[in-house]
Every structure is written in C-alpha cells, then in structure tokens.
Length: 499
Ligand code: FDA
Image (cartoon, rainbow, N blue to C red; front, side):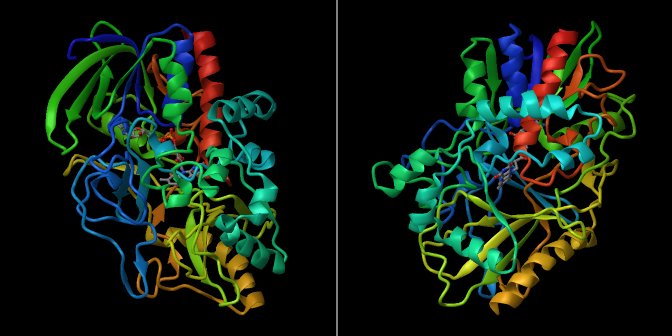
C-alpha cells in the first residue's frame, strides 16, 4: 500500500528477480517482489491454468485482440486468431524493427520458454564477459544455478525410441548427413514426467502442445523452484499485476517506487508509492532498460551513465523451417520441449548453435523447424522519445542479416545434401527467415559498463541490476542459465559486502 516501506524491493520475477528474492530472503531480509503479470495459480473455466498452442485464448497473450504467433503463417496465409484482450502470459512487444517475446507473470520467462538449460561454452563466456572470473562461474555459480533450477537430462534410450522425438531424430540425421554435430540439450522440464505422459499415466502437457502459452504440468518454472524456496523463508511477498513506473531517490534516503495496479482486463485499480532501502531491477533486458532510460531522461535518476540503454542484442536469433522429403516424416506427435541442438559454434566464419524445434501441429507436416543462435555483432540502444514519453529500441531490420548469413551456411548445406528446400510460408507469405522477432533479448544495462562489475548502478547506492540486461547482447546458447548464474554470483557479492 502507499506509504509502505520495505528493506528490499525487486522489480520483476523472472530469473534475475527470483535469484535476488531467494538470496535476500535467505539472508534474513524481508523482500517485496513487484510483478506486472499475473500469479498463474487460478484455473480458467476449462479447469486449466494455461492454453495449448493449438487453442489460444485471452490467457495466451498480454493484452492483444489477435494472437501473434512466432510462426504466424502457413500455406499462404496468417494463422493468427482473434482473442479476448486479457493479462495473458506471453507478450509480443513491438519495436520499430523487431518484436520481443517475453513472459508475463510470477516466474517471468520461465512460464513460457522452452526450458532449455544450456551452460555456455567457457571460451565464449570469457570472450563475452571478460571481467567475470570464469573459474568461479564454472566452479560455483553455474553448478549452483543448474541445481536450483532443477535442470535434468533426457534418457537417451527413451529419446531414441519414442515417437514424440522423431522430429528431433530426423533433424539430427539430416544435420549429421552434412557433417554437422548435434548435442543433447538439458532442460528444466521433468523428463521423468514426460515419460509418464507418453505412457498415458499422467495428464499430458509438453506432449499436448503446451509450451509458449504456459505448461499445466511438468515444467519446473521459477514459481516452483527459486520463488517457492524464497516463499518458504516467510520473508517474501509478491504483488502481481503491479507495474513499476518510476524509481527516484527518497528524501530521507533509499528510493521511492511508483507503481500501477491493474485488473486482468487492464483497468487501473490503484496507483501506489512505496519506499525501499534497496531496489533490484529484474524487469528483464527490455523492462529494466526501458525503465532506467526513462528515469534518466525524465530527471528521476539524471545521473545514470550514458551506457544505460546501450549494448542490446538479440543473441543472434533467427528461425527457419525446411521441407523434408515424404520419406522423412517428422511425426504428428511431437514433444513441445526441444532436446537436441546442432552445434556448429566452432565455425569461425559464422558460429551457429541451432535448436531443433518442434512443430506441434498434431498432424504430419514433414517440417523441420530451427531456432538458430548466431554471433551477430550488431547492437541497439533504447532511446527515450520525449514526444510520446515512451522508450523505443533502435534495432534496424537489416541488422539481422549476419545471423541469416551464418544460419544459411548450415541449412543451405543440409538442403543441398538432402535435396530439400526451405519452407517459405511460415514467417510470412514467401518469407523464408523468421528474422523480425526475438526470444533472447539481452543487454541494455551491461555489466561493467552501465553498472559496476556486480550490477551496482554507479553513484546510486542501493540500486542494482540483476537480470538479462547485464549480458552484452550475445551468449551463444539459450540464455537463462547464464542469467541465473550471473545473478547468483552478483547477489553473493552484494549480500556479503553491501547488506
Ligand atoms: P524475465 O523476462 O524472465 O523476467 C522479467 C519479469 O519482469 C517479467 O515477469 C515481467 O513481466 C516483469 N516486468 C517487466 N517490467 C516490469 C515492470 N515495469 N514492473 C513490474 N514487473 C515488470 N531461454 C533459455 O535459456 N532456454 C529456452 O528454452 C528459452 N526459450 C524461450 C522461449 C520463449 C517463447 C521466450 C519468450 C523466451 C525463451 N527463452 C529461453 C529466454 C528466457 O526466457 C529469457 O532469457 C529469460 O526469461 C530472461 O530472464 P530475465 O530475468 O532477464 O527476465
């Protein structure tokens, strides 16, 4: 409520926010998390909390009247559907030349993501974040993050035999035919549960087209791991459906935090102002960057440095589909949780780590779909527009080209060897590359540039950044394990020295 004072306030409940919440509460500090999305605990009229990908409704998207599926087209037309505007779980946030998909709710991106839990290659981590001690990361913080996230591996024997991963085996075979190596990708989805789904013993989730609009079972999202552990201390409180709109120094020390509470229809219920001794920015790469850029521009935090808002990248994301031959069916039954990646990161001319993604349509389509992570050097900046009062992102359409070029080296080779072609109908009408959206926003408040070496905002004692905005635009693999481990490292330092 307005006038409340809290020792620690965390903005956002994704990976960075969940780590901050656990480590602060375990250190005996009462912590309040403010989250703009819902707490996804109440089932809808169908008895389910989340929707399948085949039957989207209002729950699927954050205030949209039409779905905006990443694979938004098929056979010459849009496959998007009209839905009710509601505080749904997946946001497709539009900027001038890209859309950024993000999770909305208690648990952030963990509610909607594919669960792929990949520790980055050490050499690349050292290249991207040279100021961070990698012995500590690989000896202590990556193992700590993997354990707390509940990362597990698929049983290889089951993988080889189940119809649900035929699509991945076809993706592996066609990659191997052209000399590309593949690797199993660990996950936070409980593979033992998935086996029971396949055996018909439990309710199906990953095997029932559930993932980007949430999983009703099986997934160890942050509400079940870090945030549950933080709640168990008795020191955690969470305000869902509250959006932080301003942070500024408070007269008597600490910071005032302004927020707006909405209902699930989007109507404003209340505006509140509280004070906090310490504020942890964990609103994600986009959320944290937008908030800090706006606070600097509007004079609430005028002394933030020029690096705030800079260094944003899309982790080299680009998607593409291939049409397999009729004799290479990928299966009508596909697990929504990816399990394999093509690892061509060692190709210095254009590193690629491509997840072999499911195309869960419930029917045979012979499609191989990939989300490629590449080493794209382009970086964008968040910019305040005084006219609209909004923060934009100056990413340019052409800046995805290095990612396409790198991915083409892999998939052109596979197509040539197999005698197959790209699907040109999945990302538009005659559009091969899914190059205008991103799953892996990174940067905007880069470690050691916008912040000190541990996420502290210089000149602003008590303000910290703990999320994906610290990672400078690229990490070479799916990012949440890195975001989690880096937050663990920074929180360990902050708790030991600042609190
Ligand atoms: P994150 O976005 O998780 O959390 C930020 C939270 O802050 C959100 O809950 C948001 O609602 C809230 N917030 C924002 N602004 C706010 C404000 N002003 N006030 C209050 N709250 C605010 N990664 C991976 O490693 N493996 C994978 O398989 C995938 N797959 C994948 C699929 C899809 C569809 C998406 C969209 C993303 C992925 N990712 C992924 C990416 C991964 O989910 C992402 O990198 C992390 O969630 C980022 O963690 P953060 O803590 O930085 O922010």
